[in-house]
Image (cartoon, rainbow, N blue to C red; front, side, top):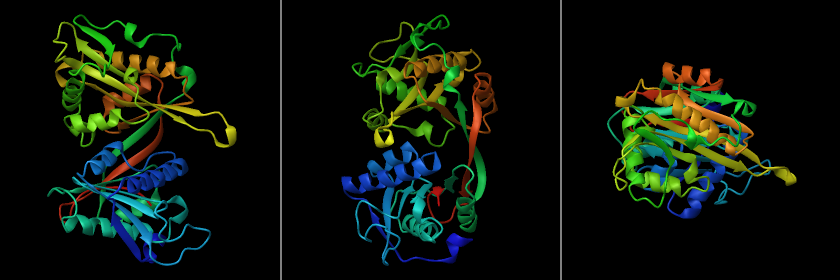
Length: 346
């Protein structure tokens, strides 16, 4: 295993300033551009920003070569890790992989959690290896992790989206329900969405624990558009405390083109959920149809979603809508012992 054969001397520093988070986001963006998927979830970054998890920046203490940035350039850490709440996320800059940085950084992250430097729990540690990633899986296996869960990225040919003029809110909903967009001017909409989301994803380890504070930070992201968050509301519920049967959320990201090239528009089905007591009523398909209509409004170049591979009903729903599996990722888990879980792109 090439990465484990060398042990660089790494200095790890806990992020304490906004520029530290900016540097981490730059590394994450670099890895996403190289790998085709983000190595760190939005929830992990939100938790780190709120002090619920520790974000660490790793740099080699030794001299750099091959045109790398100076060892203490604050804008260019070699690796970024997040630890806490039963999870560990780790990403190594693409050009520096295979040099032992991932092994050293993972060891430091786990030690940080054991020392109480991050909010931890006594449960198992969890980690993601994204796509076909033998190096990451070897790193996790050597650290005592074993695969426990599969995540599919499913893609849809944008040409299969409905007419871009179709109104997603005009779809016929069952009696007693109506579709409408999230309204940031209504103080009851945010807690209503958090409550419905928690119910729909009660068994989901990441999505189901989003708080109102998390949701506020997500709405502050540059990609957020209130019209992309569609609510399925019970007709006649109190406007100050609406009752939602479910919701669907489209994340639309516009990536700037290089050297004057046209921007690329990426539409992702960020989260679609239905309250468990409403299951079997066809609401998932209704919300998916609304999602596709909303996506079409953005004329995207790419359309995708992420779904648990073990969620056979959801996978089949998306297959019927002509989504296909584009990549598979695996979550790994280590039995209780040290502290927190992991997302690894070594």
